[in-house]
Amino acid sequence: MTSLQHRRLSKEQVDALAQEHRRWGRWGEDDELGAMNFIEPATVRHAACLVRLGQVISCAMPYDATGPQTGYLGRFNPMHFMTQDGGDVELGAQDHLPGLRFADDVISMPLQSGTHWDAFSHIFYDGKMYNGFGLEHVTSAGARKGALETMREQLTGRGVLLDFPRFKGVDWLQPGDAIHGDDLLACAAAQGVTLGRGDILLIRTGHLRMCRAEGWGDYAGGDAPGLSLDTADVIVDAEIAAIASDTWGVEVRPNETEAVMQPLHVVLLVSAGVIFGEMFDLEKLADACAEDGVYEFLLVAPPVPFTGAVGGPLNPIAIR
Image (tube, rainbow, N blue to C red; front, side, top):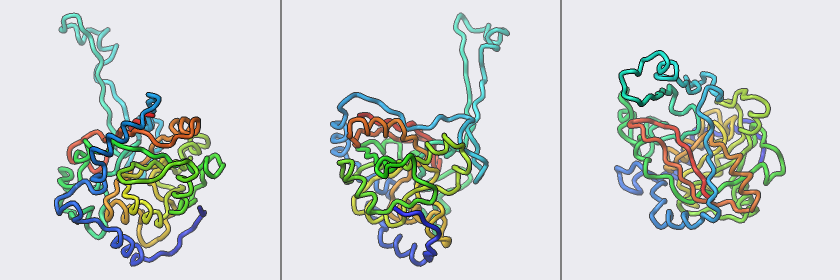
């Protein structure tokens, strides 16, 4: 694990790594699931057998106005409005109803302002998303390929948590700390787990814990610990279905190159078809795993299936 500045990797080097790991067409030219195809019925059955304690842990941040968004990329924190409340009841607005009274509310939010999955239609590189679908498939009406609703029956299976702060003996990794492929394997070995086909890999960096202790700062889009480009070899070789982290963007920032923004998104999400989950709250889960030394569990984490969305919220549930 290293703290890094820009490595000055070229666009050509990123392109070569993306090409090396490209899975376009592997599951057919119309495929919209990518590595989620690795989560098969047998995978889910095995994951269900990991439930030992009946312990249910949410890995979602609260969706409210206290979140980390600052307007970067046009994102703001969720806004909650009541359309019917106790005052309406007291003032007689519901007197036409026989007996029953109610409250109703509305949420206004960018779909990626809190804990969320990136859909394949979220990221393009050289005009293409996963499996070669072009820009024309995402219009002002939403995504027609690689959209969020295609994932509504996916992302339930074996979850594996890699807890890097505990592995390194620190409260949290520092912004700019890069987690390399060898680090993934070493942390997994120390925790007594292996990485395998169809796994949903959760990476705890402690960045969320740091920001809760010190203030959000530039959590939404600023420097952060995260995965290095060379983790792509491990993730692809292990046939990981999806990866998620407690940071804004999963990969290390500053990025390892100035030539391509978020290059690991290009290599894994666009080329290899590995879905990214961002801003997962892994603190309670990490404490539970550390208590009994078991870092695998059933993870139930499909998104809310907003039609045509390019990403969206969820309440990921780890069941131990």
